[in-house]
Image (cartoon, rainbow, N blue to C red; front, side, top):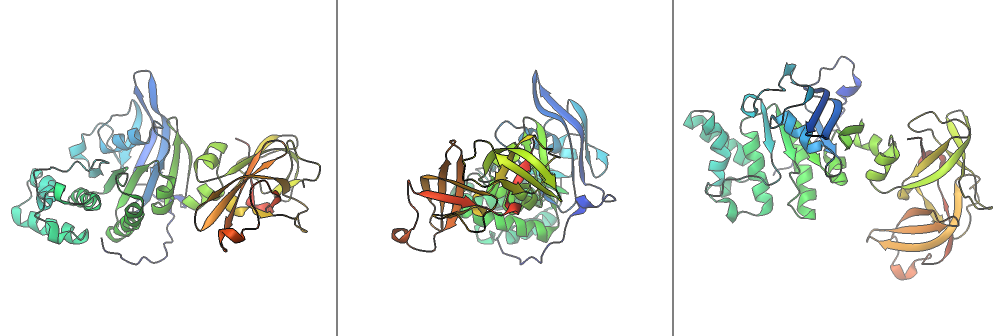
Length: 385
């Protein structure tokens, strides 16, 4: 698909109390027998937003998407679309289209016929169908492939056909259920940016379901992290990553070290802590507050991302706080960077990420070395939940 340069997007309607959401889930619960797939969930999604539902298999994200599409009916609560209660409306009466993980293309139809299928079902005149199909083929850059069958296309091309078919009816809302799962890594990464450009160009609202954290972080304006049928945190990607609300979110999104500690005091927006099992030479901990008020004596976790941890053979001179010593237990080589797993005296493992600015042969730190890890006070986040 063609790339349309995007201006920097200043878009955050969820911060405006007067903003009216396009989609609203009001205390929605969905049960299958005794199993609760979605548990009293409320959520607002806004016009032109690219919203990602993220979570492990079985967390309820696809059930939520299916209720929005009309394939499932809430057991309790309401689903509103553009102010209208659509909880009991059948799929064909909703201004919504859904792109499935399997793409669900008709194998006996050409690319053009697949795209035109929904338009024909709606009784659109033939000249208008041809015009709309041509528009969609141009949009996804598949004009030369209009007369091919799905089996004559690559995986990426089939994905584009499915996307064009979903967009042909010009829905208010496009739902994407793991749409890139069948693509290889490089093509998936390329298509993520193409989806973002397409959503921005068309001005539509996209809701994507995925278990791929990087995909959710890349494409979305906001992410809803789900677990066991509940929304644990809803926020922009940067906030989810930098300021997770719970241990679950911190551990689920990206790579993280959770250090068990006890609060020794709070002052001027900073939290002072002592690490449980700290060695005699380890410095006390200092970091910013996290998801809840923590008082002196509380047991908490400090979440630290590996890229924010410095590793050295000598104790840093400025490390009056946030400095611990341990032994290099393992090293993961990722090409442009390496991850060092450092085991502390009490058995805690802390990860540090370092760019590979020199050849492996020139690496200063290796297995079983005794090292120091340190980080800035703003790098750690205190988690009480």
